[in-house]
Image (cartoon, rainbow, N blue to C red):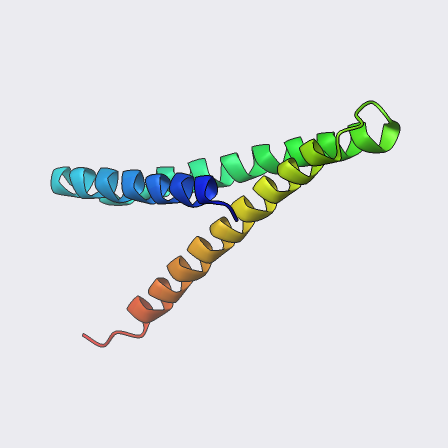
Length: 102
């Protein structure tokens, strides 16, 4: 993971958090968080598809650049790891809420 990826992830988290705080004050916080999660999944899917396209191009000989293939695969892998980590935290929070006694 390089510095640029970390900055991108940090800015996504900041935007998600700031958007959620603003929307929560208006009463639509869950919608904002859900929309952010959907956007994250869509972005991960796009990066994964791009990595697959690069792998096919490289294997068929249409591209000689192993660097492009490696970059696309690294972006897809990092995005997937981030999405899974967020999913795990959401599930953990859900389980914690379900275990609360009122």
